Image 1 (cartoon, rainbow, N blue to C red):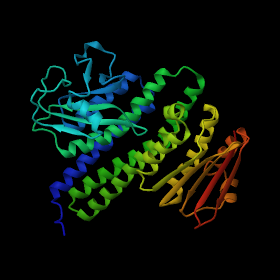
Image 2 (tube, rainbow, N blue to C red):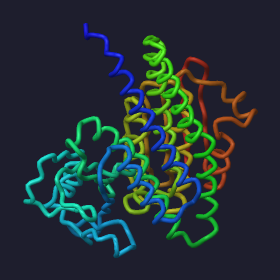
Image 3 (cartoon, helix red, strand yellow):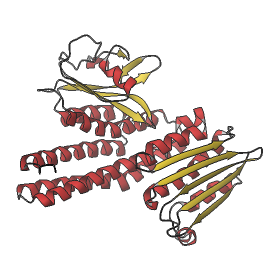
Image 4 (tube, one colour):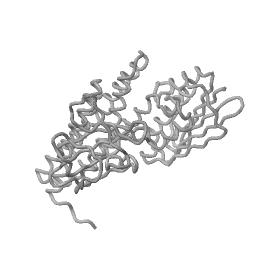
Length: 379
């Protein structure tokens, strides 16, 4: 049996989690304000330094070839323009997909240097969206060196930062009304769900701090458990919302590849056992594939949010005349007639998309019996 943590350890843990929640809240608020690309980058750099106690740091994004380029349009920052993947610690984070701590930097690698400092210690974490690494967030020169706790906190920040960067890049590049409306919808959804969850995290962290000062360690432990659950829910909501955007992998590699990434990145991380079964795949038009993709996403979102399932399976079957998609789970099920009548679970939008495709959508479920969503679309 592990010994009970000391009160000082509990207080430090509560303070650390409170700092994490505040940084996540700042990044999310910046995203919701539709800040400029440069403002998003600067907010992430600032929060990364605050969170870890580092003297400096930077954001490096992948470009074509084996290079990382600093994410800034300001040439006066004094940071290297590009650094190589194979001859830098920061680049190794991209190649391995894992955080890296270097507390005794020997100068043997081509590394990013914060302004006015030589690199003495370095912590770098991957920035990842849709199961693809888009770059690296690093911080440097913390007195006494970086710890595994610093790496964990910066990785948590990196999960939100990557989405904020991608959203800012998309917003900067968006040039039509449809994309603008999509961003407005995403902002509203983030405000309604994620911001509230992060606010709750902050409240639980503050409650834990107060309980610890009063010496009520049982309450502290319970508040920290609730805090951890709230933080996980907020990250899950962010992952769900980012997949509502048009995923590049759908256009480049097709429906099955996009669904595989989604299942691994959301359902898999939520603890579900996932399976994708594809037979006879062929490409549809991008518009039709996107409509099918969004119908399946709505079904998957319902499973993650409401079903309490352990397993989910997606089957794709292509024939000479149609494509059939089936999503099944072993969750608690529901009454389709009652849910659809009340307009819940997005079933109405699923049927509208199916009608636009001249397809047929079948929903079979019952309380305690799991559910099955089946969509047949003519080619």
